[in-house]
Amino acid sequence: MPQSAQHSLVQVLLLWITILSITQVVFITLFFTQNKSQNCSAVDPGHARLSTTNNKPVSGTPLLGRMLTFRGSPGNRKIRWDPKLSSTELLSVHETKLKVQQDGSYFINLQVNLDPKKCKTAPPSENIEVCLNLTGVPNKKEPDILLQGWITKETCSTGLLAKVVSLTEGDLEVTINSTTSDITDNEALTHLDIIYMSK
Image (cartoon, rainbow, N blue to C red; front, side, top):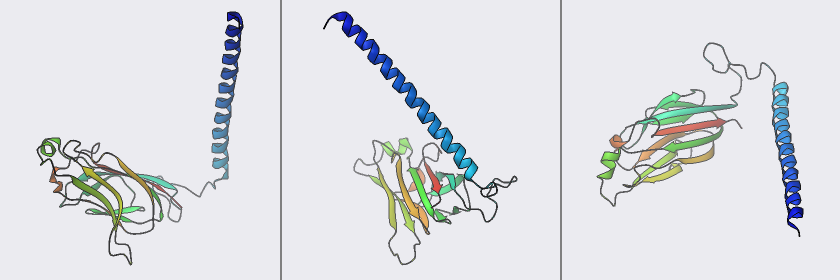
């Protein structure tokens, strides 16, 4: 095939790909904007009202979704959680336990970091286990382990542990098989984040 024929064929193909790409962007944009406007018009204006004084749902309205953030602080083999963004309608804080108040799906992110100075001097064989347990469920003696991770001397962190779970009742509690006085209580390093979605 001559060089000029290949060159013109490449230009035609590039033009065709450009047209297809623009068309896809337009359709995707229309799809999402159309769904957003339909969702807004289908919702009863009084259904998901927020009170103007405290941004909490008016009593009797269902919770559709919420984001919660907790900062970890040292406890005795358990981590205490201080609410940064919280909702007492979803979870109530009792020392080291977070009591589930609402049925729904919970997207849970957990990260625990140890103080790097103390972590690096730990014995090389010591791996610290961190677990997010669901306790206090009726007719269950043993806690359900929702998330589990390990902290090694090299990492000093569990990394980000995440899972989606459907919860109805019980207490969320983070346990650690070492003294937690060495955890980093910096919110960026040790935190529990929860996104709630109603069923």
